[in-house]
Image (cartoon, rainbow, N blue to C red; front, side):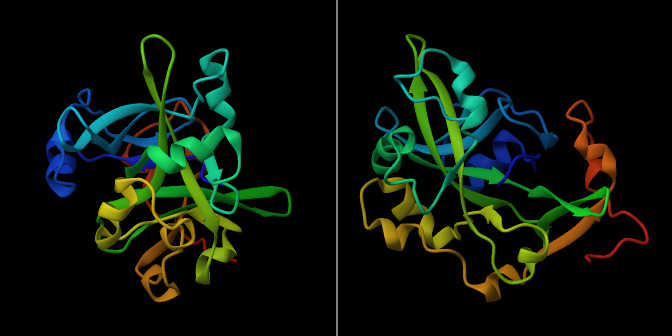
Length: 225
């Protein structure tokens, strides 16, 4: 699963990168995004006749849910079942989005200890996670989920799942709605995943109250076991 990630780019940076109109709240850099936090996303808007950079609560809440608490359990949607599950199927068909990230965290257990790793592009670029969004309640609170897929290549040493990452040439089709699900959900080729660094980091990221660039600094004398 993807349960913690970093997103630190500004409104101006993201709206330029994704060629989107900025309608988001002022973004605050976060090196430790946790479920239910506000996060940036890029979606299509009829009002603006194109892409918009917006803000949503991480953890998709279907329109039929009784309250927002349901979102804490739906931060991720599995690529293998996203078109079938009632919670996600409608959003997959009509409300897909891109979720910008600098990288994401996973933990590997070694005996009684857990080691945190940060996966991030070697060129410090921005990743676009495949996502879904929905609007809940009379105030139309925007919520979102990150789609995950089976890990590939060297990333399998860290976890058996990873976010579905979309390269720029696939953004338009993803955001358009409709389309062939198998083609839309295909994972990145393993050769492209070689551009993602697997970096051991300190234990502080395990506490959601901690937030700062030190959380993504490489931990000394630790290797990927």
